[in-house]
Length: 90
Image (tube, rainbow, N blue to C red; front, side):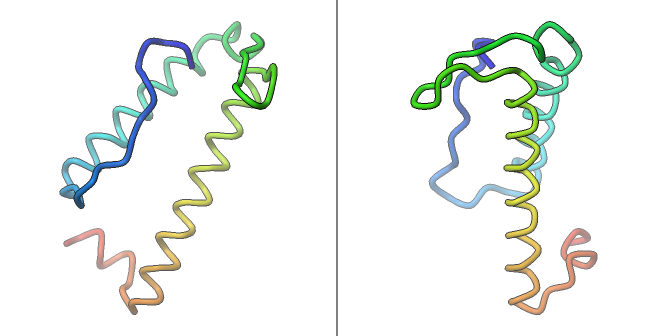
């Protein structure tokens, strides 16, 4: 997003639930700032290896990415016979 926030990276060890929540909120607030400015969505950004993309493309790409990973997590919980509603209370 070229906002100076840097590229997020995954941790080496399993983070706590509180740390995961912290990073999810931090990521959402960063995206929220980007989405709040119509000029950011209309602007074009140079994406390495892809060329010019619009802010709309970035936003929908992030949304698609989030949906895919949430689905993966629900699938893994299901394979482990863990009810996501119960897992949220742990």
